[in-house]
Image (tube, rainbow, N blue to C red; front, side):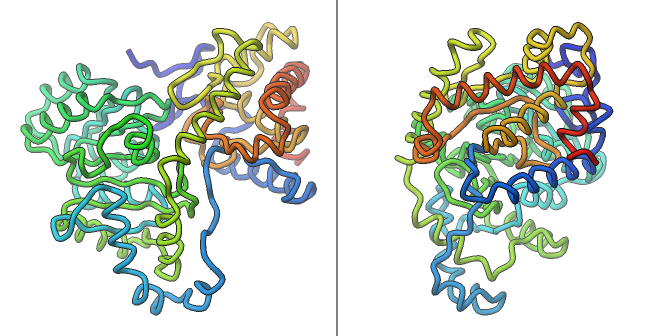
Length: 418
């Protein structure tokens, strides 16, 4: 059963799975924190930083591509190839399916809701745990009545309570990195369609992880009406664009809404999408998962049952990060919320060990837990291997414990003394 408070009794912020505190009280504070991280990277030099976000945010373009990086010329040269590769990647076929490219996966999700949902409509989210905040925000923005569900049985009950459902937001690989089984997905899609609802799959990382590592169908082969993935996730090289595909009639409307609202990717960068899709290999996905499992094995002796493992990740829950730090620092009353403890922990990893983690990618972050995921083997080798990685994590938690005795030091850590 879902809860709306953390283990310390702090109530979750609207549309987030964690509580805000007095230090990181709003998204504007997240941006100040992000600037502090940038300052550290600038001071150390980019060559000194180890990117352990589990995401690729590069711009895969060849030198000759820059010559035609123009909003008019690039689409003329690359659109047909982009569409061909996208349909192949998502499991679609022309002319039944069409595609669109958005500035982010969040942009694709928002455009989809702006197009397919009216104020007061019922929208149901379903995943193995909970929907991403971007899904909740999109539903809220259009004035939908949103119900989030975990698993098939909760979804069935929510569906039965509604006389009519406009949209089902399906997430294959949840924010918590739990994967819905293929048979469950098939049943959800069938029940949604029998209810007359359209199905949008937020297939952020699942578009590759499902087929490459768990023998699941590609996004549009799931039988959904529309689906989107992020090009920065698990086997692709970036940029952080949202790639959407689906029924041609629906995509035409969603794409138009995206252009009207400024959610589209600049066409001058279409060739970067072509390059990343051309270079994609399912084998790379498994390499990233295998490296992550090696890190998990090094962390396990330190954290025991507090290290949560999924088939693709190792995790320290934010509540546990704060609890462990309190134990190590001899602090009995929590002076900050778990989300702030996670932020401080990740800032210490960056400040003391030059490790950039996923906490510094989202604004606001999609979750408060610490995820070790899809670690590039070459980056881990350059850093010094799994044992050194685990030692840095251990040392940073101990350091956090000492800082908890004076919360002002946490503020200085996160904001650079500002």
